[in-house]
Length: 385
Image (tube, rainbow, N blue to C red; front, side, top):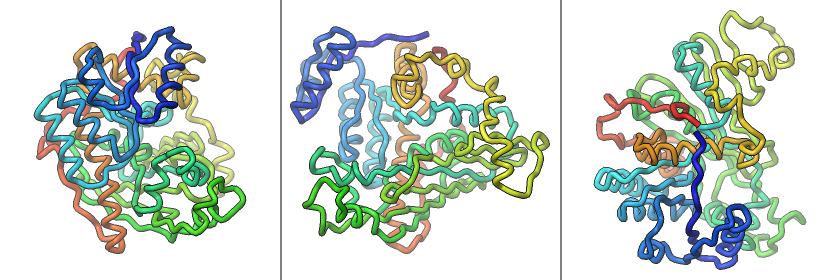
């Protein structure tokens, strides 16, 4: 069931962005929104049923906490925390207020990740032993345009060195491995390559901001992270955003009965494929074979409309927001909850500390305070659109 909502207010400290957002709502919904440059003023006026926090990384947690404190359900965008204290503040606020909260990780709703979740739940991949994910995305132009576009990534790449954007790759993996629901992360270990990509780009003709020519960047070009889980699984993450690259999340699962590889859109079930010694020949024969497993997808993916596809990232944005609204209206438990948010966000500060200590493993707190042992897993595909 598709649910229609109205955008009644937008809040941003930049006036032209407020005007732009208001125009989009007016053009698409013929509705005049209220505009605010301060979140507290929006709270005072009232009339808002839920808030979508899509601001800078630094602001996410504080703004989500304020929403919960005033009793307004909140969807919080992805990123990474700056310290573990903020992750605990997020959890503690939710436990005190019980205000509905969801981390808006759209990749948990993408086609291949949902197919992999379904195959894992049906035990078609057997016991999962290993998973890999990445955020591989050439962001050199976006980062070095930070002063021009007032974008937060620039100041982060200048001052930090960490796995700064872990949720696109780790989020879907975490749900499949039942983390926070029968399983938990034990430790995080990260190393960083040298930082040369942004410096070289900033000194080239491609860079639009000449003030960055002598700028030093702390962020390593490639961050490699190893995550160990209580049930024995290992997860590797790769952050690669400052070197030439094609976009990829490199999503991969390895189990006792099969494996899946997003990069080539392949599902390989033990006994259903021919072992070919040459890797290139294997890919040629089985690339895009995941389509034959479409019957295991939630019904809304094979039946996706063109309009839904065009609403962001091929449709997963639409399905994510619909799930959030559907659960709010029906008083259902959020599938990507505050404990998921705290766990996924915590990878960032732990990776920073690990890098400083030469890759030393860092202990991951249990944000559920032991409840993970009895918590039921809520999957993102368990809703009706």
